[in-house]
Image 1 (tube, helix red, strand yellow):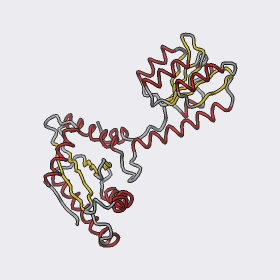
Image 2 (cartoon, rainbow, N blue to C red; image 1 turned 180 degrees about the vertical axis):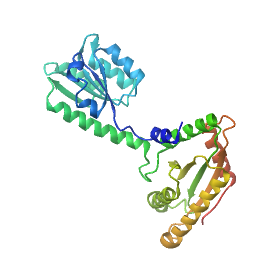
Image 3 (cartoon, one colour; image 1 turned 90 degrees about the vertical axis):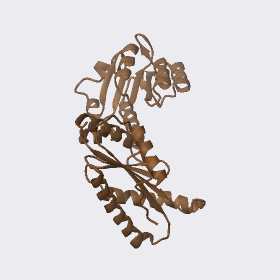
Image 4 (cartoon, rainbow, N blue to C red; image 1 turned 135 degrees about the vertical axis):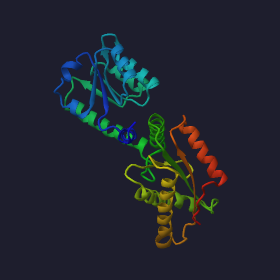
Length: 298
């Protein structure tokens, strides 16, 4: 996988996938419909077709009519809730079908109910749903404290780089950077480390990275840095730049107010054998515990 594709794999989609399950969907959403510009639109006129599309694609939002030729929309939404809880579910029905609406709210945990025939309200609800879904999706890819890539996103990139390395016999390096505190029993200090030091060190990481590099936050105040096509010397050069930036931060800003220690571990992958991301992370943690490749800032 190319670096561009790897970057895209760790970014939320620009257009969400909207599944419309309605017997009149082809007429209500023609190919020149504005909705095709806002969403990747998938159309189904039956329960069976809807289930097939859900299996084939990652659906973000489902707008489902209650009365379908081969079943009830509320039953389909209940099935989505159980099998694909991440899909935001919207039910559409005639006003007279109050019983179905109540059952759907209770059983399918629907997000909204749209009364048929549709009016302007439908577009408003879909836009509201889109914004909520985008916010939720972005949070899966971005760490809220540091604005680095989330654990999920950085693991996706690591998997992509491992696959690319093996396929094309490319070398790349991975760094595990740990920020620890000598005041581990001080809850206030730990809070400040989380809210100030982590953000500041993340900013330094971003400044020192090349355009082709990646950084993400793991748990326990650790960062994972991926340096595509960088050998051991390249990883050392990055750490030298990073440590110099940390030293400058300590002298000009922190000045010992929040004591911290940085320890790092590095592993270079040569693309000559199959390595899984879990094995690689385990190796880095093992090195970190043993103090190998450790570079400290006190």
